[in-house]
Every structure is written in C-alpha cells, then in structure tokens.
Image (cartoon, rainbow, N blue to C red; front, side, top):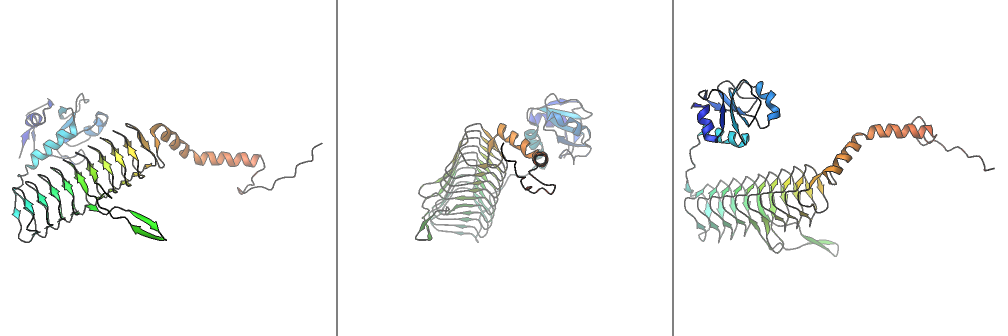
Length: 354
C-alpha cells in the first residue's frame, strides 16, 4: 500500500514541507528506514541524524531545520508516527470468538456480550465479565471477581478472588493480582501469618505488565487509579493506593501502605519504603531509594534518595573521590602520618615541653 505524504499529513493534521505528492510505502525508525519510507524525529536537536537517514520523508517537530527530505511538521511527532504506523499495518478489527468449549466457567458466572474466552481459561463462582472481554489461554479468574467492559487478560495471568477491574484494563501474561500481602507477626519466636482479607481494585484504562504482582490488602483494598501504566516485573505490596495516571517502570518495588498522587513517574528499579506518600507529579529516577515522603513535583535521585540539586552535588563528589583520596594520602605523608605503602606511620615521640 502506497500513500502520498500529503495524505499522511491529513491523517495526523500536520503541515507538509516539500513535495506532498511523494509516495510512501512504509514507516520505520530513523536507522531502519529506506528510500520510499517515512520515519520520525522526536527532537529538533537530532536533525543531523535525520540528514544521515535513508528515509525519503519524516515526521518532525514544528520549526525543524530544513533537511533534504520531505517533512510533516506536527506538535507531537511520536504520537503522529504511531498513527502512521497503524495506518500502514491496516490491522483488521478483532472479532469476538465466543467461549471455547475447553474453558471452565462456573455455572454462576455472568458473561457480557461478545466475549472471547480461549481454551483452558478458568473463571470462578460468582464472577462477572463485562462486554467484549477477551481472556487468552490459561488465564485464571478467581471467585467473585468483577471485570468491566473491554478487559483484555493475556495468557496465564491470575486474578485471585474478589479482584475488581474497571473498563479497558489490560493485564499481560503471568501477572498476578490479589495474592496475599507479606503480613506476619513474630510471636514466641515464630512468624505468624496475618490473614489478608482485602482485595485489589483497578480503575479504568489501566495496563499492567507481564509478571507484575499486586498484593491484596490486609482488611481493605489495594487500589490502582485510572489511567495508570505499570511495567513488567513491578511489585506493589498490600494496602497501597496508587493515584491516577502514574507511570511505573520495570522492577519498581513499592512496600506496603504507600500512597501516590496523580501523574507520578517511577524509573526502573526504584524502591519505596512502607507507609510513605509520593506527591502529585513527583519523579523518582531509576534505582532511587525512597526512605521519606516526597512532596508534589519533587524529582528524586540516588539511593538513599536526594532531591535533584543535592543529588547533582553528591554525584560530582563521588566522581572526584579518587582524586580526593590521592590528595589526602599526599597530605598524610607530608605530615608523617602515613608511610609510602599507605599504612599508618609510627608516631614520632614529641619533645617534652620546656
């Protein structure tokens, strides 16, 4: 399928710079694109890379420096490029497949319109599935679960009893929602389990990555707010309340009873201690270790975590440690407090005071 640059510009509401009648056959990344294909440039500072690409056209930010290619200028090049890629893929809309006879649904389960339930899916007693739910092979839905409309559960994901999902929720393969929280009390020298009697409640438009785990609350729910996106292998412990439109990258660990505001971002492998609050639009950098509450809008780095300004100073000091060590050894030697091998020198006896 070939379309003109002008047609693609109309699709993404962009402005053509150059020959709008140029035919485009495919959309690929900057380094993979070939003649007759379109790519995208997310930042104007990378215009030099675009000049070296084999692509014939590019989606770019507005006011990009002119290069020898046909351009489509837009406000958000990545978002526009995604639309163009989807246009070229031309994927047919998904068609509901019904309930496979090899699936095991309790007779009490209520299933909405246009379901797609694959082989070896299990759904427990008292559960209810909304319209257009799609459950892939091996997915396990416990008892008394409630799934909204347009929910997509991938293969081998597990929803324990009483889990609640809003509309348009996607759960990727091998994720587990509603397992017992890590609650124990030490009594007479033994770890005694505290019953985990709550559940997990997930809002609308949430996506949870492969292998992620969200534990049920001790007495009430563990909550995930509307629009939040959770990457692969994230652990969210019992009693947490995650706000709306958070973005939580892979291998983040959030300990029990933490709360977050809206639009919080957590980089990969960040860790949050229990019973903390992370304010609206805070940013936790990758590998940051959070031991105290984080105010709204604060950007945290390092472990233990510091705000952006202090973290920059600490990083500079760490980079200078080898030089500082050499200077310290030199000073100690000059004061006869250390020998050439770097060991403490024997102290010379001091002359008695006159």
